[in-house]
Image 1: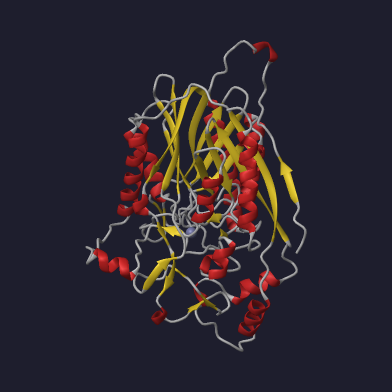
Image 2 (image 1 turned 180 degrees about the vertical axis):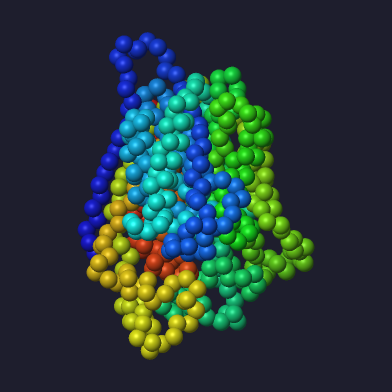
Length: 488
Ligand SMILES: [Zn+2]
Protein backbone atom coordinates (compact mmCIF):
# COMPACT_ATOMS: atom_id res chain seq x y z
CA UNK A 1 0.00 0.00 0.00
CA UNK A 2 1.27 3.40 -0.86
CA UNK A 3 1.00 5.93 1.96
CA UNK A 4 -2.08 8.04 1.57
CA UNK A 5 -1.23 11.63 1.07
CA UNK A 6 -3.96 14.01 1.88
CA UNK A 7 -3.61 17.53 0.70
CA UNK A 8 -5.93 19.67 2.65
CA UNK A 9 -7.16 22.93 1.32
CA UNK A 10 -9.64 24.59 3.53
CA UNK A 11 -10.92 28.00 2.93
CA UNK A 12 -13.66 30.45 3.42
CA UNK A 13 -14.49 32.14 0.18
CA UNK A 14 -13.98 35.64 1.44
CA UNK A 15 -14.69 38.39 -1.03
CA UNK A 16 -13.60 41.94 -0.44
CA UNK A 17 -15.24 43.36 2.65
CA UNK A 18 -14.75 47.02 3.29
CA UNK A 19 -14.18 48.02 6.89
CA UNK A 20 -16.08 51.27 6.27
CA UNK A 21 -19.34 49.41 5.77
CA UNK A 22 -19.58 47.83 9.22
CA UNK A 23 -22.94 49.32 10.00
CA UNK A 24 -24.68 48.33 6.78
CA UNK A 25 -26.71 45.10 6.97
CA UNK A 26 -25.33 42.57 4.49
CA UNK A 27 -27.41 42.06 1.38
CA UNK A 28 -27.93 38.57 -0.02
CA UNK A 29 -27.76 38.51 -3.81
CA UNK A 30 -28.23 35.91 -6.52
CA UNK A 31 -27.85 35.71 -10.28
CA UNK A 32 -28.45 32.90 -12.77
CA UNK A 33 -27.70 32.27 -16.43
CA UNK A 34 -27.40 29.52 -18.99
CA UNK A 35 -24.59 29.16 -21.50
CA UNK A 36 -25.05 27.07 -24.65
CA UNK A 37 -22.52 24.19 -24.77
CA UNK A 38 -23.97 22.18 -27.68
CA UNK A 39 -21.16 20.65 -29.73
CA UNK A 40 -21.12 20.84 -33.51
CA UNK A 41 -22.81 17.93 -35.22
CA UNK A 42 -22.01 15.59 -38.08
CA UNK A 43 -18.38 16.62 -38.35
CA UNK A 44 -16.67 14.37 -35.85
CA UNK A 45 -16.33 11.19 -37.84
CA UNK A 46 -12.64 11.12 -36.96
CA UNK A 47 -13.22 11.52 -33.24
CA UNK A 48 -12.79 8.54 -30.99
CA UNK A 49 -16.30 8.53 -29.59
CA UNK A 50 -18.12 5.62 -28.05
CA UNK A 51 -21.12 5.95 -30.34
CA UNK A 52 -21.79 7.23 -33.85
CA UNK A 53 -21.52 11.02 -34.17
CA UNK A 54 -24.65 13.05 -33.65
CA UNK A 55 -26.46 14.31 -36.72
CA UNK A 56 -29.30 16.11 -34.94
CA UNK A 57 -29.88 18.27 -31.87
CA UNK A 58 -33.25 17.78 -30.17
CA UNK A 59 -32.60 20.34 -27.45
CA UNK A 60 -29.60 22.57 -26.88
CA UNK A 61 -27.14 21.62 -24.15
CA UNK A 62 -26.55 24.22 -21.48
CA UNK A 63 -24.21 24.99 -18.62
CA UNK A 64 -26.79 26.12 -16.06
CA UNK A 65 -25.28 28.53 -13.56
CA UNK A 66 -26.47 29.87 -10.21
CA UNK A 67 -24.23 32.27 -8.30
CA UNK A 68 -24.91 33.36 -4.71
CA UNK A 69 -23.37 36.18 -2.67
CA UNK A 70 -23.86 36.76 1.08
CA UNK A 71 -21.94 40.06 1.03
CA UNK A 72 -18.70 38.36 2.09
CA UNK A 73 -18.55 34.95 0.43
CA UNK A 74 -19.77 33.77 -2.94
CA UNK A 75 -20.72 30.37 -4.32
CA UNK A 76 -21.11 29.39 -7.98
CA UNK A 77 -23.04 26.22 -8.82
CA UNK A 78 -22.82 25.02 -12.43
CA UNK A 79 -24.54 21.95 -13.85
CA UNK A 80 -23.67 21.02 -17.44
CA UNK A 81 -25.83 18.96 -19.80
CA UNK A 82 -23.05 16.44 -20.33
CA UNK A 83 -22.40 12.80 -19.70
CA UNK A 84 -19.17 13.64 -17.87
CA UNK A 85 -17.12 16.67 -16.97
CA UNK A 86 -13.36 16.24 -17.08
CA UNK A 87 -11.30 17.49 -14.13
CA UNK A 88 -9.13 19.42 -16.60
CA UNK A 89 -12.05 21.32 -18.12
CA UNK A 90 -13.47 22.12 -14.67
CA UNK A 91 -10.08 23.34 -13.40
CA UNK A 92 -9.46 25.47 -16.50
CA UNK A 93 -12.92 27.04 -16.32
CA UNK A 94 -12.31 27.89 -12.64
CA UNK A 95 -9.11 29.76 -13.52
CA UNK A 96 -11.10 32.00 -15.89
CA UNK A 97 -13.97 32.33 -13.39
CA UNK A 98 -11.58 33.52 -10.66
CA UNK A 99 -10.10 36.10 -13.06
CA UNK A 100 -13.45 37.46 -14.23
CA UNK A 101 -15.52 37.28 -11.01
CA UNK A 102 -13.01 36.91 -8.16
CA UNK A 103 -14.70 33.68 -7.01
CA UNK A 104 -11.95 31.24 -5.96
CA UNK A 105 -12.00 27.63 -7.29
CA UNK A 106 -13.04 26.08 -3.97
CA UNK A 107 -16.27 28.11 -4.15
CA UNK A 108 -17.17 26.88 -7.64
CA UNK A 109 -18.94 23.56 -8.35
CA UNK A 110 -18.92 22.37 -11.97
CA UNK A 111 -20.85 19.15 -12.48
CA UNK A 112 -22.40 17.07 -15.27
CA UNK A 113 -25.97 15.78 -15.37
CA UNK A 114 -24.96 12.47 -16.98
CA UNK A 115 -27.34 12.70 -19.91
CA UNK A 116 -26.22 9.74 -22.06
CA UNK A 117 -27.11 11.44 -25.33
CA UNK A 118 -24.80 14.40 -25.20
CA UNK A 119 -23.20 13.67 -28.53
CA UNK A 120 -21.10 10.86 -27.09
CA UNK A 121 -19.22 13.65 -25.38
CA UNK A 122 -16.08 11.82 -24.39
CA UNK A 123 -14.35 14.76 -22.83
CA UNK A 124 -11.23 12.97 -21.72
CA UNK A 125 -9.75 12.81 -25.23
CA UNK A 126 -6.08 13.52 -25.58
CA UNK A 127 -4.73 16.75 -26.98
CA UNK A 128 -4.76 16.89 -30.76
CA UNK A 129 -7.85 14.76 -31.17
CA UNK A 130 -11.02 16.40 -32.44
CA UNK A 131 -12.81 16.51 -29.11
CA UNK A 132 -10.03 18.57 -27.61
CA UNK A 133 -11.41 21.49 -29.56
CA UNK A 134 -14.72 20.97 -27.81
CA UNK A 135 -13.02 20.96 -24.41
CA UNK A 136 -11.61 24.44 -25.07
CA UNK A 137 -15.04 25.68 -26.22
CA UNK A 138 -16.73 24.10 -23.20
CA UNK A 139 -14.24 25.64 -20.78
CA UNK A 140 -14.95 29.15 -22.07
CA UNK A 141 -18.70 28.67 -22.25
CA UNK A 142 -18.86 27.50 -18.60
CA UNK A 143 -16.82 30.51 -17.49
CA UNK A 144 -19.06 32.79 -19.59
CA UNK A 145 -22.17 31.38 -17.89
CA UNK A 146 -20.82 32.10 -14.42
CA UNK A 147 -19.77 35.61 -15.41
CA UNK A 148 -23.22 36.29 -16.89
CA UNK A 149 -24.92 35.04 -13.71
CA UNK A 150 -22.53 37.21 -11.67
CA UNK A 151 -23.32 40.24 -13.88
CA UNK A 152 -26.99 39.75 -13.08
CA UNK A 153 -26.72 39.79 -9.29
CA UNK A 154 -29.79 41.23 -7.61
CA UNK A 155 -30.99 41.28 -3.99
CA UNK A 156 -32.63 37.90 -3.37
CA UNK A 157 -34.39 35.61 -0.93
CA UNK A 158 -33.51 31.95 -0.60
CA UNK A 159 -35.23 28.78 0.63
CA UNK A 160 -34.70 25.02 0.38
CA UNK A 161 -36.56 21.78 0.89
CA UNK A 162 -36.59 18.01 0.47
CA UNK A 163 -39.31 15.90 -1.17
CA UNK A 164 -39.47 12.26 -2.17
CA UNK A 165 -40.16 10.70 -5.57
CA UNK A 166 -39.63 6.98 -4.96
CA UNK A 167 -41.43 5.77 -8.10
CA UNK A 168 -38.75 6.70 -10.65
CA UNK A 169 -35.58 5.24 -9.15
CA UNK A 170 -34.61 1.56 -9.37
CA UNK A 171 -31.40 -0.11 -8.31
CA UNK A 172 -29.96 -1.76 -11.42
CA UNK A 173 -27.78 -4.37 -9.67
CA UNK A 174 -29.52 -7.64 -8.80
CA UNK A 175 -29.02 -11.03 -7.25
CA UNK A 176 -30.57 -13.44 -9.74
CA UNK A 177 -32.01 -16.94 -9.53
CA UNK A 178 -29.40 -19.73 -9.84
CA UNK A 179 -31.24 -21.25 -12.80
CA UNK A 180 -30.19 -18.25 -14.85
CA UNK A 181 -26.65 -19.61 -14.78
CA UNK A 182 -23.36 -18.01 -13.79
CA UNK A 183 -22.74 -14.24 -14.05
CA UNK A 184 -19.36 -13.63 -15.66
CA UNK A 185 -17.21 -10.75 -14.46
CA UNK A 186 -14.33 -8.61 -15.72
CA UNK A 187 -11.99 -11.59 -16.22
CA UNK A 188 -14.61 -14.28 -16.67
CA UNK A 189 -14.72 -14.77 -12.92
CA UNK A 190 -18.13 -15.67 -11.54
CA UNK A 191 -19.84 -12.77 -9.75
CA UNK A 192 -22.70 -12.52 -7.29
CA UNK A 193 -24.71 -9.72 -8.88
CA UNK A 194 -25.61 -8.70 -12.40
CA UNK A 195 -26.03 -5.13 -13.69
CA UNK A 196 -29.13 -4.48 -15.82
CA UNK A 197 -30.05 -8.17 -15.62
CA UNK A 198 -33.23 -8.18 -17.68
CA UNK A 199 -36.65 -8.32 -16.06
CA UNK A 200 -37.26 -11.90 -14.93
CA UNK A 201 -35.53 -14.40 -12.71
CA UNK A 202 -34.61 -11.66 -10.24
CA UNK A 203 -34.22 -12.32 -6.52
CA UNK A 204 -33.47 -8.97 -4.86
CA UNK A 205 -31.73 -5.69 -5.59
CA UNK A 206 -28.13 -5.49 -4.42
CA UNK A 207 -28.49 -1.97 -3.03
CA UNK A 208 -30.89 0.82 -2.10
CA UNK A 209 -32.01 3.93 -3.95
CA UNK A 210 -32.22 7.50 -2.67
CA UNK A 211 -35.77 8.74 -3.36
CA UNK A 212 -35.11 12.31 -2.20
CA UNK A 213 -35.15 15.40 -4.38
CA UNK A 214 -33.28 18.12 -2.50
CA UNK A 215 -33.72 21.65 -3.84
CA UNK A 216 -32.76 25.24 -3.26
CA UNK A 217 -34.80 28.12 -4.67
CA UNK A 218 -33.98 31.81 -5.08
CA UNK A 219 -36.28 34.68 -5.93
CA UNK A 220 -35.95 38.43 -6.17
CA UNK A 221 -37.14 40.55 -3.25
CA UNK A 222 -40.23 41.35 -5.36
CA UNK A 223 -41.00 37.62 -5.65
CA UNK A 224 -39.79 36.97 -9.24
CA UNK A 225 -38.28 33.46 -9.50
CA UNK A 226 -34.54 33.61 -10.30
CA UNK A 227 -33.46 29.98 -10.17
CA UNK A 228 -34.21 26.59 -8.66
CA UNK A 229 -31.51 23.96 -8.34
CA UNK A 230 -32.56 20.39 -7.51
CA UNK A 231 -30.69 17.12 -7.13
CA UNK A 232 -32.14 13.60 -7.64
CA UNK A 233 -30.34 10.25 -7.65
CA UNK A 234 -31.33 9.11 -11.14
CA UNK A 235 -28.75 8.06 -13.75
CA UNK A 236 -30.79 9.53 -16.66
CA UNK A 237 -34.01 8.57 -18.44
CA UNK A 238 -33.25 8.25 -22.16
CA UNK A 239 -35.71 7.42 -24.92
CA UNK A 240 -33.81 9.63 -27.37
CA UNK A 241 -33.65 8.62 -31.08
CA UNK A 242 -30.23 7.50 -32.38
CA UNK A 243 -27.55 10.05 -33.28
CA UNK A 244 -29.49 12.78 -31.51
CA UNK A 245 -28.15 15.14 -28.87
CA UNK A 246 -30.46 15.83 -25.94
CA UNK A 247 -30.13 17.03 -22.36
CA UNK A 248 -32.64 14.34 -21.29
CA UNK A 249 -35.11 14.73 -18.39
CA UNK A 250 -32.77 17.11 -16.57
CA UNK A 251 -33.55 19.89 -19.07
CA UNK A 252 -37.28 19.16 -19.16
CA UNK A 253 -37.36 19.44 -15.36
CA UNK A 254 -35.53 22.76 -15.60
CA UNK A 255 -38.20 24.08 -17.96
CA UNK A 256 -41.18 22.57 -16.23
CA UNK A 257 -40.26 23.83 -12.76
CA UNK A 258 -39.99 27.35 -14.19
CA UNK A 259 -43.50 27.05 -15.65
CA UNK A 260 -44.90 25.79 -12.35
CA UNK A 261 -43.21 28.63 -10.46
CA UNK A 262 -44.91 31.07 -12.81
CA UNK A 263 -41.69 32.33 -14.37
CA UNK A 264 -42.47 34.44 -17.42
CA UNK A 265 -40.56 33.09 -20.44
CA UNK A 266 -39.62 36.64 -21.32
CA UNK A 267 -38.73 37.88 -17.86
CA UNK A 268 -35.41 39.67 -17.63
CA UNK A 269 -33.12 38.01 -16.74
CA UNK A 270 -34.72 34.63 -17.57
CA UNK A 271 -35.43 32.04 -14.88
CA UNK A 272 -32.88 29.20 -14.73
CA UNK A 273 -34.06 25.74 -13.66
CA UNK A 274 -31.35 23.20 -12.85
CA UNK A 275 -31.39 19.47 -12.10
CA UNK A 276 -28.12 17.95 -10.87
CA UNK A 277 -27.32 14.26 -10.56
CA UNK A 278 -27.48 13.02 -6.96
CA UNK A 279 -25.90 9.65 -6.22
CA UNK A 280 -27.08 7.34 -8.99
CA UNK A 281 -24.13 5.15 -10.03
CA UNK A 282 -26.28 2.03 -9.53
CA UNK A 283 -29.73 3.58 -10.03
CA UNK A 284 -31.66 3.96 -13.26
CA UNK A 285 -35.23 4.49 -14.45
CA UNK A 286 -35.94 0.93 -15.62
CA UNK A 287 -38.66 -0.65 -13.48
CA UNK A 288 -37.27 -3.90 -12.12
CA UNK A 289 -38.94 -6.12 -9.57
CA UNK A 290 -38.19 -9.51 -8.07
CA UNK A 291 -40.19 -12.46 -9.42
CA UNK A 292 -41.97 -12.53 -6.05
CA UNK A 293 -42.97 -8.86 -6.33
CA UNK A 294 -44.06 -9.32 -9.96
CA UNK A 295 -46.35 -12.20 -8.93
CA UNK A 296 -47.93 -9.95 -6.30
CA UNK A 297 -48.41 -7.11 -8.77
CA UNK A 298 -50.10 -9.31 -11.35
CA UNK A 299 -50.02 -8.61 -15.09
CA UNK A 300 -49.01 -5.00 -15.74
CA UNK A 301 -49.98 -3.04 -18.84
CA UNK A 302 -46.76 -2.56 -20.80
CA UNK A 303 -46.71 1.00 -22.08
CA UNK A 304 -44.85 1.74 -25.29
CA UNK A 305 -43.25 5.16 -24.97
CA UNK A 306 -42.69 7.62 -27.80
CA UNK A 307 -39.28 9.36 -27.94
CA UNK A 308 -38.87 11.78 -24.99
CA UNK A 309 -42.26 10.79 -23.54
CA UNK A 310 -40.79 8.99 -20.53
CA UNK A 311 -38.32 11.81 -19.88
CA UNK A 312 -41.24 14.26 -19.85
CA UNK A 313 -43.19 12.01 -17.50
CA UNK A 314 -40.29 11.77 -15.00
CA UNK A 315 -39.51 15.49 -15.25
CA UNK A 316 -43.18 16.43 -14.69
CA UNK A 317 -43.43 14.17 -11.66
CA UNK A 318 -40.26 15.58 -10.11
CA UNK A 319 -41.24 19.20 -10.83
CA UNK A 320 -44.72 18.69 -9.33
CA UNK A 321 -43.25 17.16 -6.19
CA UNK A 322 -40.88 20.10 -5.79
CA UNK A 323 -43.74 22.55 -6.35
CA UNK A 324 -45.83 21.00 -3.57
CA UNK A 325 -43.07 21.69 -1.06
CA UNK A 326 -42.33 25.05 -2.63
CA UNK A 327 -45.77 26.38 -1.65
CA UNK A 328 -44.80 26.36 2.02
CA UNK A 329 -41.13 27.22 1.62
CA UNK A 330 -39.51 29.25 4.38
CA UNK A 331 -37.81 32.24 2.72
CA UNK A 332 -34.66 33.79 4.16
CA UNK A 333 -33.61 37.38 3.47
CA UNK A 334 -30.01 36.51 4.26
CA UNK A 335 -28.00 33.34 4.80
CA UNK A 336 -24.25 32.81 5.24
CA UNK A 337 -22.21 30.92 2.67
CA UNK A 338 -19.09 28.90 3.40
CA UNK A 339 -17.07 26.30 1.52
CA UNK A 340 -14.46 23.66 2.34
CA UNK A 341 -12.49 21.83 -0.34
CA UNK A 342 -9.98 19.00 -0.13
CA UNK A 343 -7.91 17.13 -2.67
CA UNK A 344 -7.90 13.42 -1.88
CA UNK A 345 -5.17 11.21 -3.29
CA UNK A 346 -6.32 7.68 -4.08
CA UNK A 347 -4.26 4.73 -5.20
CA UNK A 348 -5.16 3.89 -8.74
CA UNK A 349 -7.01 0.60 -9.18
CA UNK A 350 -4.56 -2.10 -10.13
CA UNK A 351 -5.58 -5.36 -11.84
CA UNK A 352 -5.30 -8.59 -9.86
CA UNK A 353 -2.93 -11.40 -10.88
CA UNK A 354 -5.95 -13.35 -12.14
CA UNK A 355 -7.13 -10.45 -14.26
CA UNK A 356 -3.68 -9.99 -15.82
CA UNK A 357 -3.28 -13.73 -16.49
CA UNK A 358 -6.72 -13.78 -18.12
CA UNK A 359 -5.97 -10.69 -20.23
CA UNK A 360 -2.62 -12.07 -21.42
CA UNK A 361 -4.26 -15.34 -22.39
CA UNK A 362 -6.94 -13.51 -24.35
CA UNK A 363 -4.32 -11.35 -26.06
CA UNK A 364 -2.26 -14.43 -27.00
CA UNK A 365 -5.52 -15.98 -28.30
CA UNK A 366 -5.12 -18.88 -25.87
CA UNK A 367 -8.70 -18.29 -24.66
CA UNK A 368 -11.82 -16.51 -25.90
CA UNK A 369 -13.59 -14.23 -23.41
CA UNK A 370 -16.99 -15.45 -22.25
CA UNK A 371 -19.21 -12.39 -21.92
CA UNK A 372 -16.89 -9.57 -20.97
CA UNK A 373 -16.81 -8.09 -24.45
CA UNK A 374 -19.98 -6.24 -23.42
CA UNK A 375 -18.00 -3.68 -21.48
CA UNK A 376 -14.48 -4.53 -20.53
CA UNK A 377 -11.76 -5.95 -22.69
CA UNK A 378 -8.43 -7.54 -22.05
CA UNK A 379 -6.82 -4.34 -23.38
CA UNK A 380 -8.23 -2.30 -20.47
CA UNK A 381 -6.81 -4.76 -17.95
CA UNK A 382 -3.40 -4.70 -19.63
CA UNK A 383 -3.43 -0.90 -19.84
CA UNK A 384 -4.14 -0.69 -16.10
CA UNK A 385 -1.34 -3.20 -15.42
CA UNK A 386 1.13 -1.00 -17.33
CA UNK A 387 3.78 0.86 -15.29
CA UNK A 388 3.00 3.91 -17.49
CA UNK A 389 -0.26 4.41 -15.61
CA UNK A 390 0.13 6.99 -12.83
CA UNK A 391 0.06 5.20 -9.46
CA UNK A 392 -2.34 7.67 -7.83
CA UNK A 393 -5.29 9.84 -8.77
CA UNK A 394 -6.01 13.21 -7.14
CA UNK A 395 -9.69 14.07 -6.85
CA UNK A 396 -11.44 17.17 -5.60
CA UNK A 397 -14.26 16.91 -3.06
CA UNK A 398 -16.15 19.90 -1.73
CA UNK A 399 -18.71 20.80 0.90
CA UNK A 400 -20.67 24.03 0.90
CA UNK A 401 -22.98 25.63 3.38
CA UNK A 402 -25.95 27.73 2.26
CA UNK A 403 -27.49 28.75 5.57
CA UNK A 404 -28.72 25.46 7.08
CA UNK A 405 -28.51 23.58 3.78
CA UNK A 406 -25.31 21.65 3.07
CA UNK A 407 -24.01 20.56 -0.33
CA UNK A 408 -21.46 17.76 -0.89
CA UNK A 409 -19.80 17.27 -4.27
CA UNK A 410 -18.12 14.09 -5.52
CA UNK A 411 -16.25 13.51 -8.81
CA UNK A 412 -17.57 9.99 -9.44
CA UNK A 413 -20.68 8.07 -10.47
CA UNK A 414 -21.49 7.41 -6.84
CA UNK A 415 -23.56 4.46 -5.59
CA UNK A 416 -26.82 5.42 -3.87
CA UNK A 417 -25.87 3.86 -0.54
CA UNK A 418 -22.83 6.16 -0.32
CA UNK A 419 -25.01 9.24 -0.74
CA UNK A 420 -27.47 7.90 1.82
CA UNK A 421 -24.71 7.29 4.36
CA UNK A 422 -23.42 10.81 3.82
CA UNK A 423 -26.90 12.27 4.30
CA UNK A 424 -27.30 10.24 7.48
CA UNK A 425 -23.92 11.28 8.93
CA UNK A 426 -23.99 14.94 7.88
CA UNK A 427 -23.95 17.28 10.91
CA UNK A 428 -25.81 19.83 8.78
CA UNK A 429 -29.30 18.87 7.61
CA UNK A 430 -30.55 18.64 4.95
CA UNK A 431 -27.69 17.62 2.67
CA UNK A 432 -27.76 17.88 -1.12
CA UNK A 433 -25.42 15.48 -2.92
CA UNK A 434 -24.04 16.42 -6.34
CA UNK A 435 -22.06 13.73 -8.14
CA UNK A 436 -19.91 13.83 -11.32
CA UNK A 437 -18.72 17.19 -10.01
CA UNK A 438 -15.33 18.85 -10.64
CA UNK A 439 -14.18 15.77 -12.53
CA UNK A 440 -15.35 12.30 -13.51
CA UNK A 441 -13.22 9.43 -12.27
CA UNK A 442 -15.47 6.46 -12.96
CA UNK A 443 -17.95 4.54 -10.83
CA UNK A 444 -17.64 4.59 -7.05
CA UNK A 445 -18.99 1.43 -5.38
CA UNK A 446 -18.50 0.60 -1.68
CA UNK A 447 -15.99 -2.13 -0.67
CA UNK A 448 -18.98 -4.41 0.05
CA UNK A 449 -20.34 -3.88 -3.47
CA UNK A 450 -16.88 -4.58 -4.90
CA UNK A 451 -17.10 -8.02 -3.26
CA UNK A 452 -20.39 -8.69 -5.06
CA UNK A 453 -18.97 -7.74 -8.45
CA UNK A 454 -21.07 -6.48 -11.35
CA UNK A 455 -20.17 -4.07 -14.17
CA UNK A 456 -19.63 -0.95 -12.06
CA UNK A 457 -16.97 -2.69 -9.97
CA UNK A 458 -14.77 -3.63 -12.94
CA UNK A 459 -11.38 -2.12 -13.52
CA UNK A 460 -11.55 0.52 -16.25
CA UNK A 461 -15.00 1.80 -15.29
CA UNK A 462 -13.82 1.93 -11.66
CA UNK A 463 -10.46 3.73 -11.40
CA UNK A 464 -9.59 3.95 -7.73
CA UNK A 465 -8.70 1.77 -4.74
CA UNK A 466 -11.49 -0.51 -3.50
CA UNK A 467 -12.04 1.38 -0.23
CA UNK A 468 -12.03 4.85 -1.82
CA UNK A 469 -15.69 5.41 -0.90
CA UNK A 470 -14.93 4.92 2.82
CA UNK A 471 -12.10 7.46 2.70
CA UNK A 472 -14.20 9.91 0.68
CA UNK A 473 -17.24 9.72 2.98
CA UNK A 474 -15.07 10.14 6.09
CA UNK A 475 -13.39 13.18 4.55
CA UNK A 476 -16.71 14.74 3.53
CA UNK A 477 -18.21 14.17 6.99
CA UNK A 478 -15.15 15.88 8.56
CA UNK A 479 -15.49 18.77 6.12
CA UNK A 480 -19.20 19.11 6.89
CA UNK A 481 -18.18 19.16 10.56
CA UNK A 482 -15.85 22.09 9.85
CA UNK A 483 -18.74 23.93 8.20
CA UNK A 484 -21.10 23.06 11.05
CA UNK A 485 -19.02 24.92 13.63
CA UNK A 486 -19.15 28.10 11.58
CA UNK A 487 -22.09 30.29 12.57
CA UNK A 488 -24.87 30.13 9.96
ZN1 LIG B 1 -24.06 6.15 -17.21
